[in-house]
Image (cartoon, rainbow, N blue to C red; front, top):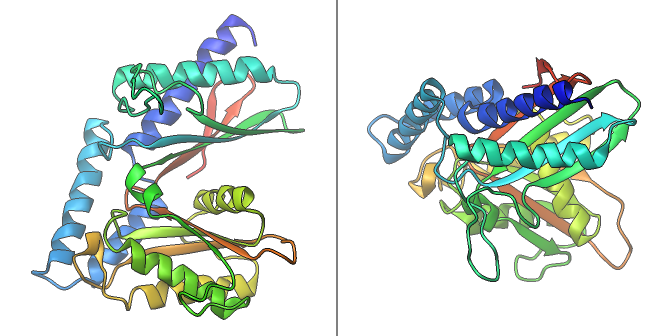
Length: 297
């Protein structure tokens, strides 16, 4: 990239960060509004959903973060094969530091050994960048900001699991997913969304479970078995009565997205990632010149 391209690419990255942090995607807003509509008037659940909706509107108007915890910064990128990867990652980190300085990201990232905060959100493992080359002549840049509260209530199970009577079958898978919801209660800032991986190894399972959050809320899983399981998990979770923020109510989950990976015969992992109501995910198609061409959500 020439200097002019670098400047435009950097500007586009900062705008992607701003929009992700301050504006809820339309598909998520629809899911939240649907949840608010089913909660009874004069209940704590209805009050919580009203506050959530008010917060979404204020954040967008003021271009301020939707939540004080702007979370782990996760990039998922496809880039033209001829791109200078080292330069691209350097510009991403520069954009994160610039967005932090502008207030689009809070100064959240700290050194795990010393507790030191350098105020930039840039350091070992921050931001997280998953990037793959492709043959297309544009960048597909998707960003997820995943808060610490919802990250804390993620869970991974190894089947069979005698604690919940879960065997190595789809019924066992369902049991452990619902157990994760039950254990989370209101601590993950619900109503939440689950990303789940059946199979894989421990590391890949968690990675792919987070990738599920890149799917739109109203999409349908192309695998009919998984599509049915996604619907059943949401329906059964919403009968648990946990509700928004754990206050009770009908909206414990807004959605569940599930993927399945091959596994070794010795292992049967189910990896569950939890996303809070502040479902901050955005993406853009960016030209090789560095300009945003299209928003993806």
